[in-house]
Length: 85
Length: 194
Image (cartoon, rainbow over all chains, first blue to last red; front, top):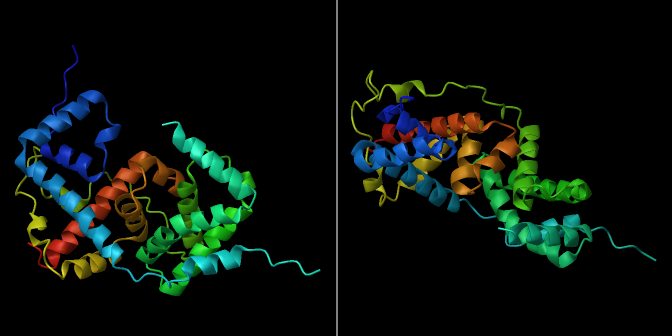
């Protein structure tokens, strides 16, 4: 019977940081979840990653919006000139 | 599951007919996210607006060639990516495949256990200055890492959509995401968020 590799915190942390868990075999995904349930340090890293994503979204939300007629200008640019008879 | 492709199929059919209402809806739905992504990559307001205009121009020009295998949104972000690369030669591919950032490795001992616990950055969330700090830290990240991070975390694109647009493997995407997140983490900690 094949031995199951038990992942350490470093391997779990890399999976967290790289969004890699979802692409792993089911046995690894189960181990990943169980590890997170039992390891406070790795759970803290997972929370930190979610927080960084959240503050990045908020920071990007404060970027100056384009002018109010932004969409209209694009549509004008895309519209073929009307044909003159 | 089946409704999304159908909806996109109908959308494409109407766009191919140059239905003005559908085109306006498409520009309204995707224009500002594309603009935000371009600004996030360091283009100024005018450049970002020009880029988005270019994206929609190419979108319409190539519409008849689009086979509908990806979502319209994915395709638009793909066009944006290549337009940004055209404009900025420094947006080179980050070919680094080292699985782990060197400074990240220092957080663990030889057995892969934490040397010290990760910082609880969230407790500083209420600070008004965090937005500015995040902006500055985002600017410090290499462009391809920044692009991957913004597409994933801010625009919410799926991994496979990002891989398709940037023409990178899933493994490479993971490395870029890890490096972006770790650089952000280090940068924020370096600014005193600890």
